Amino acid sequence: MSETYNYDVVFIGSGHAAWHAAITLKQANKKVAIIEKDKIAGTCTNYGCNAKILLEGPYEILEAAQSYPNIINQEQLSINWSNLMNYKHQVISPLSNTLEHMFTQYGIDVFHGTGTLVDPHTVSVNKTHITSNHIVLATGQHSNKLDITGSSFTNDSRDFLSLEQFPKRMTIVGAGIIGIEFASIAIKNGSEVKVIHHSNEPLRGFNRNHVTKLMDKLSQEGVQFYLSTTPEEINKTDHGLVIQTNNGDVINTDYILDATGRLPNVEGIGLEHVGIEYSHSGIQVDEYLRTNIPNIYASGDVLDKVVPKLTPTATFESNYIASHILGVEVNPITYPAIPSVLYSLPRLAQIGVTVEEAQDQGSSYTIKTIPFGQQLLFEYKNEVTAEMDIILDQQKRLVGVEIYANDAPDLINLMTFIINKQITAQELNQMIFAFPGSSSGVLDLLKLQML
Image 1 (spheres, rainbow, N blue to C red):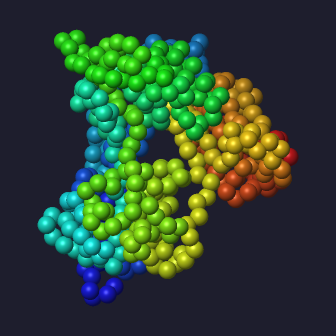
Image 2: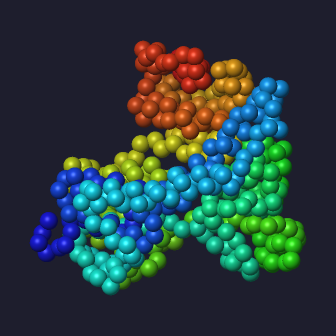
């Protein structure tokens, strides 16, 4: 580090897009600082992925039990939301302090406050200027807010994940990932659930047949969908909240979740002052994740990028930036095939070439459907609707998978290995997998289609 600067690298933000690189750089004897205006470790750790998957756990049990209607007494299964929320606080609340302690143990300086760029090598925090050879912007995203009368009565995903009492009537605006994931929980909790979506195509980006199956299932469970509908006004009455829509619907509810998307945190961090290029989609970077000011990088959800804005991609970018700063990686960032998962009940997952893309390419690909829930009835715990579409190239290599199943997240991780390493059916046959089990059965069915 030049003696001109206080630090080698300063990170604005402390989530996965930052701290993986921070630790790597510190282990390489760099002087590192992290600036965080909220809880240390960011949204995913404190307000997002961790809390969501923890709260969803018991509902997975309810979902699995439905596959044994004459064997498990469904009426005796219920969720105590208050106890579940207490459990969430016990597990999630300490994580921020735990990770901050880990950072300081490594020797990383942690500043609590808003970091604002002053010049290409200076950041202001708590009225103090600190200088650094490199700066990494990892400020993430925040929830969108409806621009309508009464939007102050809405809640975001962070609010939902901290609900102390579950509302009897819930309305969700937005049938994207967050909206459908929370609808899956709410309907199983016994609430009256309504979902408003601006178009007639919810969950864009996922397998359309799987989306239709999921929407039909949620509808059968009691979720009411208002498609091609937008809320125009929200009013509070003595009996709750009232939503007026563009189609003339009057929706009475107790709780409104605004799940209309997330926006990059590009305001208030000095981008305009320094001249860093950005848009409403995020900060613009080159193939090395550098902004138009070469010593300033950006990472994670704040990026303007086409790859999915996911925790694993943020971690991947964070690790890349550390390697690039250290000179270990001199090539442009290259993303592998990235799995995406919808944590609904059941789950949807996909990786690689999609069915829609394969259909557009015609003879370049072969699409096959494997109804493994039916073919592996007892191994797959009677989940007869479970299935996956696979896409093979002309050499019969697996290049894409789309799954509809409770175990989709674990199965898609297996497919990630096969796709990224271009493992053939013959190579899979040289491996021995644990048996009996649902994943080994799915792999057997997969190999038959790849031969």
